[in-house]
Length: 434
Length: 173
Ligand SMILES: Cc1cc2nc3c(=O)[nH]c(=O)nc-3n(C[C@H](O)[C@H](O)[C@H](O)COP(=O)(O)O)c2cc1C
Ligand code: SF4
Ligand code: FES
Image (cartoon, rainbow over all chains, first blue to last red; front, side):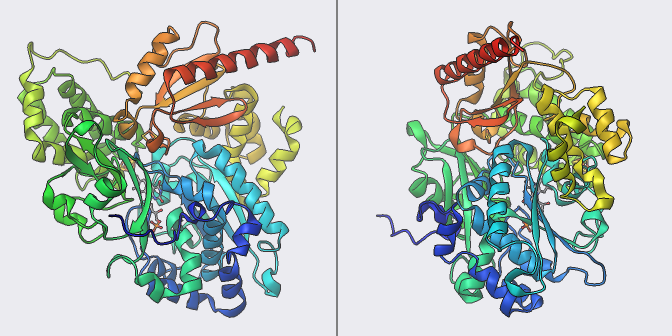
């Protein structure tokens, strides 16, 4: 028996047709929250409400959003806001649906954030493949300017705000906030050494708030309905709703907006319709390709998907991009896919990541193709362990999650893979997929 | 010259960034150049460098770093099939292999008529709609989701006839 679906909070376009039309959005309360903050609230008070709501960043790290805003350095000006719409983690496709279906709620969230930190310019950094999406956001921004909701002296106040889109050009690393800022400055998208963090030293060296699209899309309703309302959903440490992007071996892949703390079982079997072809679930990745492999036993399936519970099964919630893996999938094949991804996406700035992802992909390819020996698996484990803790940004760490957990938790798959070795492995050619 | 042909667009782009941070416009300007010819050549890089007050080498390093810019002419249309993990779990690799064999090419190659290049790419944020691909061409980028080999071939036929029609028109001028 399915419970009655409460109204959507982020994917509201599924309840309300034509929500990407400004008139329709305004008829449904749109831009009331922005008007309220500009005309009735002190900037710091806006940040306080967001803090009280317990909203945590949806881009992966789960950092408390209001706290981040409160770190903005008021001694240095101007301030900037940058919306992270790079959405490139394999298995993640939620920000795209928000921006396509409910773009004004996202833009209103950007505007409220900008007011809260007194930025007069905000950029929306989109991955290059979102070319059409950027063009439609440009039209929505123009509509907002025409309606007097963006521009100079908003609602008769002294506050002014301009929004601009900026397209990336195919680099996963530009989702990392400091690489994103470098890219937006017209440089190579390579991460910066931190600290200093963006709220004190961000775009053009100025205080900057970088937030994920989904994070920002939560903000208008938090202002409108209050922090208490937001806290009535989810768990104490992970309040609110989250969009879970469900993909892989599942009957009904797609985005599911559910309270944080929903179990893997409910997402995969109730909403996602279970595993196709009468197969059994074998493993789960909770944070896209950056995730460790969770053994999908009963305990894991009953684990709530929130920031505090997922670590109990040896993983992180991250962006909540849930990839389902059934028992037909060989784990060596799977980690060969992920290591190739990270090898391709390593920005090359630090040696352990650049060289490590290269060697890992070399070894995983050999293992996946059944041309490796047992020692190659040990070597792979060794190379992966060497990367840990030695990298400038989290990409290096992401690249070893599936490898280490795969070998530790699905050892028998590797035994099968190396058992098929017939002749001593010869020198391999470089993988053809780059 | 880009500066003459796209004067209006270039002004709009430059206006997005602070006057002392023109360099931020390098990626959007490269897109203008690429849309014009489907790749970015040396002259365009030099011109963009001049517009922004940076060196041609700096522009070239940007082109080299980001995977959506091309330095050489390939097919007129790039069919970029996502074969990343979530899509691969839904048959994307088989889809690409089959599509390529129907076109008599291998992944990464261009068809004999020089029009169609098929290549594997990383996740395109459409994992629930695999098999899927994007088509990159002078006109921009478009997504094609929930594809079959037949639907992809039909689209390719459409692209080919568009290209023939366009060539016919160009030869009249
Ligand atoms: C390699 C890498 C890729 C990332 N990709 C994204 C991304 O595509 N989108 C995103 O919002 N955050 C991404 N992040 C996280 C950002 O660095 C940053 O934490 C986030 O944008 C902050 O926003 P939030 O607090 O609203 O989550 C990535 C981080 C790393 C290390
Ligand atoms: S860890 Fe990898 S992606 Fe991150 S800065 Fe170093 S080389 Fe670049
Ligand atoms: S894995 Fe193919 S679109 Fe995400």
